[in-house]
Image (cartoon, rainbow, N blue to C red; front, side, top):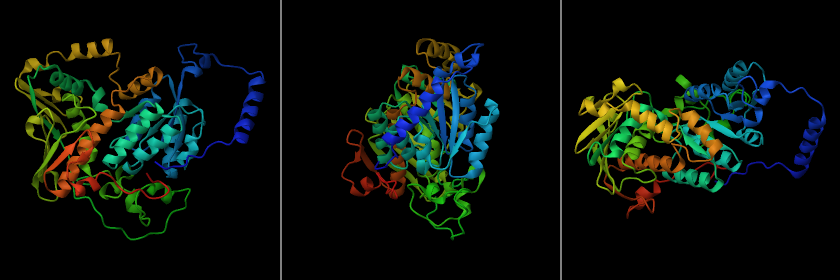
Length: 451
């Protein structure tokens, strides 16, 4: 990514250091809570966090963050004034002060040397780029899914996290929900026999809330609001330029943009299959890889019920991406089939899990105990991220796992668009003898936010 993060000049650094030194030399009262007394966490042990684009789902994750005693949320960046205000009030109410800083430009937040990590929950178009900028600024990253607009962005994102040694967690939180982990463990352990078929729900295919086709049309131009109210240039970011229209930023969770291809990662397939395909990859021990073949089955345009893609991994296991079936235990789940049995689930409640035999569901508590005791992993996505910041070990939803799942879903989307079979090489990360499909592995990014 050719992004110029504003560096702090030597003069500015020295001036700041002088001020810090002067303050440090002055006598001060230090409360016991800052030293970790009375059950508190010492300030030196707290992880300071900033947020970028927090609304709806992001606010849920922020709530989990604010409940952790060893984190401190100190700043919010958002292009919308109403969201800056709402998140600031959320943090200030939690801490009983007015200290949460607000920014409109993420580069200003990332320039703060006191921020250890960032929570990124913008629209799809900003996920990868904001994460890359944060890593280059020395921050660890928790980013919501889908975390890339293309296969190429996924690779850039994974490589950047590796190059800069950053801790990275993508918001595919089903990896830290016991019912889903238990199902994946059954498949990985061989208790289902030889795994042969994976089913991943698409939920909806399309950009809209009911799965309608992703739109490419432009809405008519409307007068732009003041930049302090909504910075349209920053809202667009790397997306192709369009004139302002309030509909793009309207809807529940300010999600009108979800209906438009230029702003989303590929419709409902990318949004929901980010979860379900990720778990299929995990169950198949295919993290960091992808199927070698994709076949469109049912190419009628429109709703997800008419959209099905079959994939095949190098080990022969079949991946079926489609709308849910009754045996999948719900509308948004996944199912793993082996020669000795199957398991399916769609929710965090074990009552929503089904299996070919009740006995397969009998050891959930033992699995949780083994996982938390032996692996020292919490069944909590935010907690796993912050624990890994301290230990510097990979998170459960790490960059390579993210890249493999995103590659698989993007490739399935390309298969749907082209309506023909595709052969994919997971090592070279390219389609075999297919220039048209390979051109779809990336998207153009608008200057100055260019790759």
